[in-house]
Structures are given as C-alpha cells and as structure tokens.
Length: 446
Image: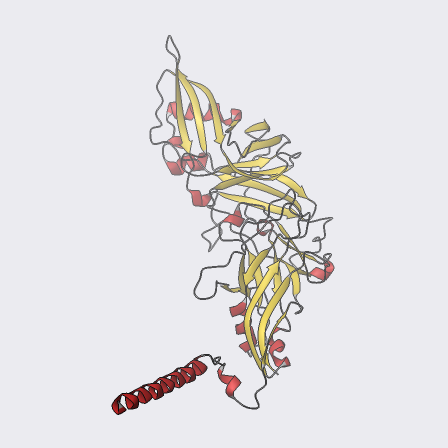
C-alpha cells in the first residue's frame, strides 16, 4: 500500500513537470521573429517611400538617315500629316531576266504588266483613289560608296514621263493585286526578246538596257501604300500569244532582282508644323518648344530623347538610401491615335549626349529587350500607355561618377520601323494629363 501511494505521487509530479516544459516551449515558439536590425539599439526604423515627381526633360530629335533597303516592302505615295508633315515615298527595284527567254516565231505581243500585292499597311486615307506611276530609272542603281545598304535619302534619276499608271482604290487588307501596264516599254522589250539581241543576252546586259523601275504616287495622293517584295511577290509579267488557228495564251515572268538593291526613298516636309524648326543644323527641340509634347516616327527620322537630370542627386537626400524599383510610364496624347496607328512595340536605347546609341534596355534578371507592353484604352483614352522597368538603368546612373549626359531614346524594334509610318505623340511631365513619369520605390533610414 505504501509503495502504491509513493508511485502515485511520483506520477503526479512528472505530469506537472511535463506541462511546464510544453508551456515554455509554446511561449518560445509564439514569439515573433524580428528583422536583424530590430534587435540592435540606437538604429532608427526604415521608411518605404515612392515618388513620381522627379524632373524629366524630353526633346524631339532628328535622326540621321534610315536604312530602307532589303525590307520586303515597296512604298509609294504621299500623305499630309498635321503633326509630322508631308511624307512622300518612292520605291526602286530591278528585274531579273528569265532563264528561258526564247520566244516562238509565232509569238505575238499582248502587254507587259507589273503586278503589285499590298502588304496590308497604309499611311493615310484608304477610301480615296490612289494614283500609282511606274517610271524607268535612267542611271545605274549602285550602292553608295563604302556602304552595303541604301537609305531613305537615296534616289536615282528617272524618266520624265511614266511607263504606265494606275488610278483606283487600293485595298490593303484584302490584298487585291494592283496591275500597272507598261505600254511604253512592253512592245520594245518583246521585240528584243523575239530577235534575241545583245540587250537580253545576259543579266548585266539587261540591266544596262533596263536599269530599274521606280514606283511613285501621283500628285493628288492622300496616302502612302506598301506592296510586298520578294520571290514570287512582285512580278513583271509579259503577256503574249501564239498565233495559231486558236490563239494560245502565254506568259513570261521577270521576277525581282536582288532584294538588297531594292529600297524606298522617303522624304518629309515639316513646313507649317510644330516640328518645322528641325533641320540638319538644329537637330533637337525641347518639349517646351513643341506644345509640351514630343514626337516619334522613325521613318521620317523623328524620335524622342528622355533625360533625368537629377537622378544622380536623388540618393543624396538621405545618407542611407536603397532603390527598390523604377517604372517609366509613357502616355500617348489623347486623340493622337484615333486614326493613326501607335507603334505596337517600342524599345528603349541608352544614348550619349550627342545621341549615339550605346545599348538597349533589357528586362531585369537577364530578360530580353523591353518593348513597352502597350495597353490601348480605345474607350476613354486615359489608360493607354507603354511601361518599362528602369530599375537597372537608375541604379547604374545613381552609382556612376560620370556626369556626362546618358539619356534614353525611343526606338521601334529593328525592321518594323523601316516600312511603317506608325507614330507616337508623348505628353511631357508638365501637362495636366497624358504625361510621362518615372515612379521610384525606395527605402531610407532616417
């Protein structure tokens, strides 16, 4: 009986000890984990802040000439843009002599026709009739000295009168083929082929005879239209028939010659526009001189440069500063893209004080080139925007002790801007709405 009582007391003591241990463990596990600096003394707490009031300077910049050769698109026409001016485009191309160029003795000439397939792009009013003329190039088409490309400023002399013309509606979206008869050249070329003269004996001889063709718009045009270039896309076709009892129709195709020797001449007259002061001697205009707006249309050699003059000084406002993220938002001016297309993608490039490109801005953590993630608000026109992560750019600028200006410049992806007149008008930071802004998220220790 004694042993039994003694054993019961021992069990009750053990139970209390166990409960106390679990309570101590529970109290310890419920204690919140603190940040390392919370356990230190005399260290003030951190502040997480944001600002979008950093000074931003923007300007419209006139670029050097644009590469327009080997683009796969032939441009022709004229359009008067109220903001950017009057743009005119002419396309140049050459023909390939067919491998089988011998004509039957019974062959009779019908016509020589250039077949043009719209590429889907148009700058201006597609509801108006387009006048398209084809001229003969009268001087050899040769690349500029020390160059392997043609530029928008390149052009060659042509005949005073067209070889053939078209006047009518062009339907870019439908892709209906436009046919231009070369009545002034077809019969003569057919005669050379039938007689197998030196002019059609080799490709070089043929190019000496027919140096090239140029597609140009008429004086009354209100749009620039694009046509597809490439094998089987732009064809000059000779129609003839064999003089039998029942005429037998025949064709002979002259495909596009070297695509790298086809190009577009593009010129822009900015007279009467906000950008009229841009010239070779005045290559930039501050947004304060252009209605608190800047402009982007690469094919007319215009883009926007952005600078943050006080970015390096921003971290100096507090001894302990850490930038967490930076987002650039670019808002097109409302009403500027109702009838004109915005560039679907716009990249950013880092540039020197004299606008020499040094690098592209990439997505942080090893991503690709940033293109702005365009969102279009077609209803209210208040949420249309391009956005970019500028964290790495800002960190680099804040850490740099080089006070030479290193801004950023807008540029569409390579290739697209060489054949399209997509345009962007940007509000500067001084406007009431549709503004450009840089949002900084940062941390300080007070």
